[in-house]
Image 1 (cartoon, rainbow, N blue to C red):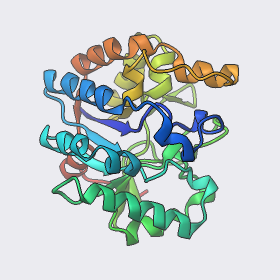
Image 2 (image 1 turned 180 degrees about the horizontal axis):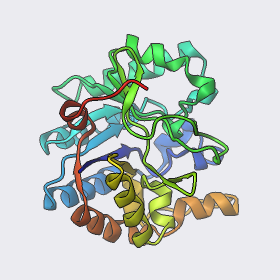
Image 3 (image 1 turned 180 degrees about the vertical axis):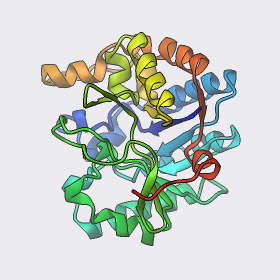
Length: 279
């Protein structure tokens, strides 16, 4: 079964966990490492002949258009991660519309193909922010990959949604983040911090479980997760420090194993190759 490999292209200082200590206004003052870490991921994908979807932050595209061009030249799909990495939770509809449009304009300067996909920062498309769906459709977005089918996380999640691809609205497909059903609970197996937290054997077992049940897994990671040498930020709470820095030195080796164990494609190709049911 084909799963989806995706990358949220943002720099190490763009993440929500660091936003209190490194606000958006200070990003240009930080050491950028996104080019080298994204290039490393491109090399890994090339060695395994994997096509992925890169959800690129508009802020990154404006500063590193050649990186976006290289992603496209390498045969991957370019999608949008918004512009400023502000969560939908903290934006009004018109602010989101402007942020999304700005990201699409930044990507249009660096790519030759239309952008069809969107992922909200920190998976912040929730019951409370469903107003964003109409804006996505009006902006030409054809699929979203922002919904996490879990109920335990304080910042994101909708537990009672479809676990496989489904029609979110007329003209808009949802590719939810991968979870496996275990004893009546949805257990994330979609990458990111979960990929670094679990032993690799657990991730492999959960993804196999999803595939055996006929569901592809939407997997994701960030370029900074293959960069154990990134700066360490002081002042983080223990939980945020653990979530951001835990096992950064193991991500690349685990990714190599994952790409050998499973088959991956881009979001756009998965949608084209299989019918998407209406829930």
